[in-house]
Image 1 (tube, one colour):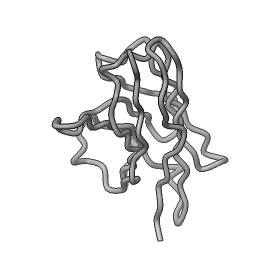
Image 2 (tube, helix red, strand yellow; image 1 turned 90 degrees about the horizontal axis):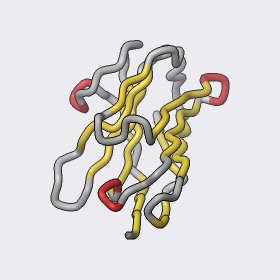
Image 3 (cartoon, helix red, strand yellow; image 1 turned 45 degrees about the horizontal axis):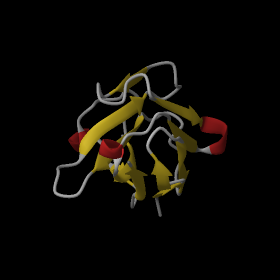
Image 4 (cartoon, helix red, strand yellow; image 1 turned 180 degrees about the vertical axis):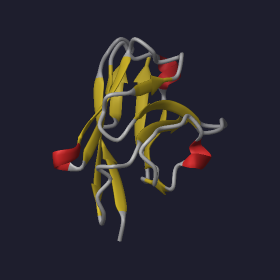
Length: 124
């Protein structure tokens, strides 16, 4: 059974940092692009960041560029999202996702595997 499991969410004050992790099991995603998406209450799920299969190319939403860093460790079957200078508008459930292809896109419909999400709440 393929599983993506997020962890690392929580409550943090504005300006603080969190590091999200995504652990994969059931199959290897070492040759697959992966990404982070988020969904705030009452809003649609939106793209946050993506990384290609070997980590040498990344993409970020404009709203998080310069504050968030996506990375992966294929030896550990894991992906990460370092979030710095957090703002209240970053409050959302964060999801990790994986494609069946090696190159990333910013479109959630291109991702085939999804985790259950982890809550991030940023207080002002």
